[in-house]
Amino acid sequence: MDNSEAFPSPSRRSLAKLLALLPSAAASATPALNPGAAEAAPAAQPAYVPSFFNAAEWKFLVAACDRLIPQDEIGPGAVELGVPEFLDRHMQTPYAAGDIWYMQGPFVQAPREFGYQGRLVLRDILRVGIRGVERHCAQAYSNRSFAELEHAQQEEVLKGLEGGHVQIEEVPARDFFSYLLSEVRNGYFADPRHGGNRGMGAWKAIGYPGMRAEYLDWVEVRDRPYPLPAVDLSGRRA
Image 1 (cartoon, rainbow, N blue to C red):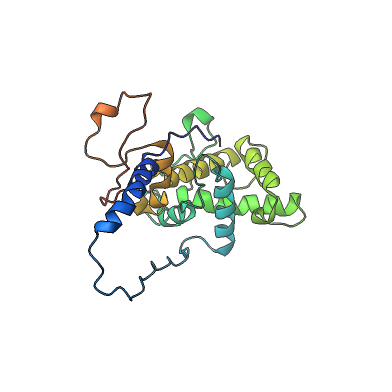
Image 2 (image 1 turned 135 degrees about the vertical axis):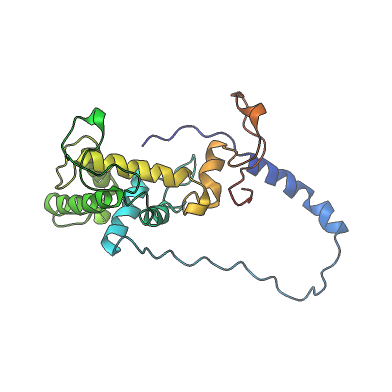
């Protein structure tokens, strides 16, 4: 859950340089064809409506994402970058349905070094895990849901899951937490086409160049941030 120190954002430096040139550029610009026409404001993006998770599960995910990667002075949080949307979309993929997992028995509670050996696929691990956490919260916090808890209480629950101190049925708490955290990280740093990392905010925060075709000259550079903005799979620049 710790955030690492971010590199200075090259996109912000580029923007500052661009703004410094605006007065001279405006003086030489060609007048608009219709100067009296008001410029249309960009259309607001409609709120994402989950199609895999139900309303209660969705509230849990938004609250959990907000605690696992919160917004701070280093960069935007998981919620701001659309990670819950990534999770909902990812749970509808063949991978989340276990298409590349070996799902034949025996199903046993193996030592942690062998990984999860149960019968549930990823999307079911998250779903039954959320249900188990909500039961725990109702018992331990006067019938309140996870999303209704104070931030400190939510973090207490998450730490309990991570350490195996919170008991939930059907799936080991540590396995549920491990998969949840892994998926949140995936959504935070994945290409924006998958729903998370909105506006390449995570890439900008860490100075990652994204899907640029070639940046071998900078692979070994450690004392300077990459000077160009990130590029996603569709070719858009941050």
